Length: 549
Image (cartoon, rainbow, N blue to C red; front, top):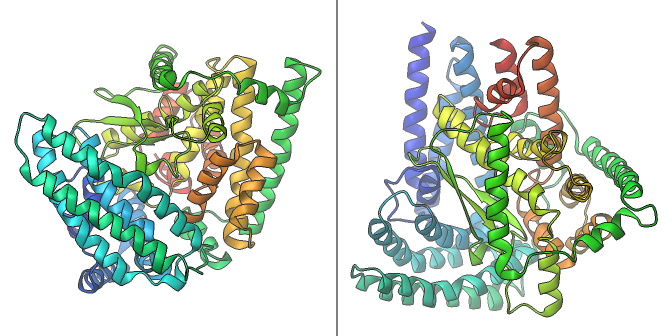
């Protein structure tokens, strides 16, 4: 009986996701479903109402499903899908990005195009046809943005994020896309017209934000304590209150600072950890050598993971190290990872490294270079590439058995971010990050992640301002102001995501200890393979699955 019910459940899930992706074509492209690569989302009143109706219908159907009669594995997937549907509806109804977030429309337009350009899932001429089709849609999406946004409810910081991104991305449509069309051996006359129309629409949108939204923007970016704690419970399956997490962040901040000073005394008894790190930040690659330095370190880390049998490296995976696309540099100060779509046959990830713009003011340029100092590069590579984000997400894509497991990270970032952060200390313990300066850089990152907990909770539940958060990162972590502002801007857009690094690591460590007790004798690789084989489940569900097997 359970088998038949399982089959019916998974069929409904497939049908629901198919309809949802049709309403969210850029998300479909990101996941590796290319049926809708020629379009962008419909933000008209009719389109928004249709999407809301779909979300409500899916949730109602799931609420009426006899989940207790499903098999244990299917119940975990039901839990994921049920919570994910609630999360999507919460996002739509209570965060109301279509009315409050001008950057969301820009991300739809630019992300929709850049995904097609950066992901090598089809021959370039085929992808370029979809690029032209989406570029033609940009004026329509931005007109709908002007109709939907309520200036008085838009947070000023979100206007800043959108405006700065616009200043970076508009030249791409003015010059980059036409140049791409002209450089190919194929003729794409439509690209030039589409690029001109998109450029005009982007400039109009910039003027709209400057003249009609910015002067009236009075919205509050903070989620508020009730909604913040609801996300903790419903998405991350965490039992903690905001106040508990605030104390946790403060405690780990203090403990980490003590660890750093103890290590600093061993490196140089006459200097503090901050002084040693500030000196280390003066040693960085030349601007043109930043990407090659990261590429060399990626190859070195991958070879170490395989040689030491840390975890199985999935067959057929690959990783490209590329400059961060210009429109994303406002919220990615140093580096980030873009996973291959879970549904893609080709599992090639992209490791973005934010380059140093020669047009920056000298002080800002120096701050950006110092963020790429030599001792920090291996720590960043371990986190973003091997055995961190890239390996974990490719493993999930390759080996997670069901669609809900492949999409677990859409519900909660705890496992994804927690795993990558766990890998930093793991690789230190295994000797890869053996240099004392690398260890100090790793602890500095831990200090930063503890500060993220404090800031995340404080921004969204305690009235902390953007400027206070920037000052906190500069004072407590030693982060350069330019980079701190980019960080805090991102925190305002994603409540509970910043805390997921350190909290996720701590929750994963609890799961590891329980699995070790239940299954003594597992090798390091067997343990890690078991953790990664279930996709990106929230740690609570991962624990239930691993201990039940």
